Image (tube, rainbow, N blue to C red; front, side, top):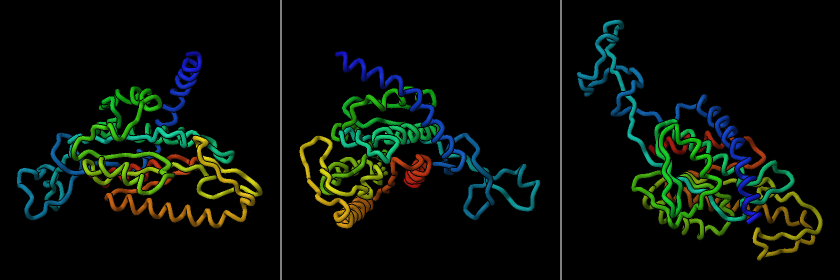
Length: 283
């Protein structure tokens, strides 16, 4: 009980910092991107454009047209809210970090998840966390509740309720066998096509940085491998890693989706911008 209390207190202490950082990253991306806006039915003005053959006459803005030498159409912004289902891999692998990384993979994954959620909520979309417990968020007032939910939520993609025509945002290191990746994502991708796969990697996973005799083991400690000379294994490791990455891209492409890769030593903003564009292109 004492351990659970200490963990809860540690988590609560980190939440304000997570929210502040996510807000900062989201604001950086929002300033440089028009996001998911598009023409459609709605009340909010979006843009003027020249009248084209086939356009309804009742959409002509006669006042603006009278002040110029061309006829203009007034377009409104499409306001149909869409559900984006967010899954963050709960596996213990994400709690690891090397000495070269400032944060764990889970910390970076949570930051990207929350920052993406902030952008979506500000754009008027609905955010749903993937798991047995149905957690939905909508509206700008939901941002703080989302920040509180992400670090403690029991993410479970198998138990997720995915509305048809929703979008999927899946965050993991995806460092497991490719058939397992396809088996995990395939069933829900059938309901929500064109998923955005976000791969969070530690720099020591992208390139083996060790020398001499080392022992490699998985996060659970179940599988171990002794390397007598890590430097001599670096080339073989690089080839296997590149093959895995190519296979992962093929899995994403086969599902009609996009793969975004982010290193924990890198700034979060470029990855968030790539996520935002991937979601925008799915509209």
